[in-house]
Length: 414
Image (cartoon, rainbow, N blue to C red; front, side, top):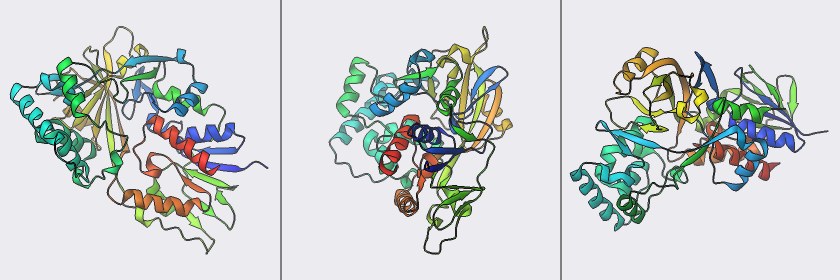
């Protein structure tokens, strides 16, 4: 008899682990509470225009095994390959991104002060143990106050000094002082940045990726899992028993949905109930013509923190002979009226088409988060219950990191 596995949640993590396990011969049932797969990468069509309901998702990876697996499913002919063209809107003008490589575009006195602080920081030992101190020690007070702190506070809406430093590993570029100076002298774009180039589907956006991975899988849509029971040997969801469960949903919910009858099993989920996260609000808009892919908005006079020019990712994301489209993203939950008011503050002739709120998008790691998650994962894995994905592991995974985590789980546990 095939090993039966239940996977809860059909974001990229749930889809990837289900596809790989199914291809290995396991009997996999995937449960999804919504009427379609994709989680945060799911798109809809509004007034004939593709809407990335949570930001704008593209594919790029420097992880060989992820690339090999991805391209075993997809054809490159289904994708466009684009070069990242990101800018920062600061003091009513465009500045190159990342800002430290474009100091020459700032006012002379700001540039002089920023370089002086970078030189000083380069000669000083680093002692940061939190995100706020890391930014200050790396970039200096001038760049922090100008860009890094206001922009990151907009996203995370929390005290940056409480954000764990180890969480940053692999998620932010760690700038080299010499590279910063050379890039400013020679005006050279940094091609090592995440998504410096990326692949984007010609049609369907990131939903195309999710739907393709989902092909052939046993998926139960419109099924919200509110109870997962455990007898002495197996896990029970509905009327079915499973040898293993892979949970990719919100780890904070486990305290209310896990029911274990075996008195010898003690699973403490209380340490993760109060983990912090932020939602996002998104507005699909027409926007004036531009060649940008991303535009970052650090200034505090507007609540939006970035514009994603999804209409430039593929011409099929726009209606022929009409304006370019984009997604404007806000951290936190804003009403439609609040978003409309905020859009009017921006000077890009933004004309809203549709709106969306996502209650949870960004996970926030504090000092004990990883220890608490690790303890819970170890306890659950003893009984073939596995946590996977951004909200189950409380890790800020991009698409390729979600796929890598699925691969590593399978390699270690199956």
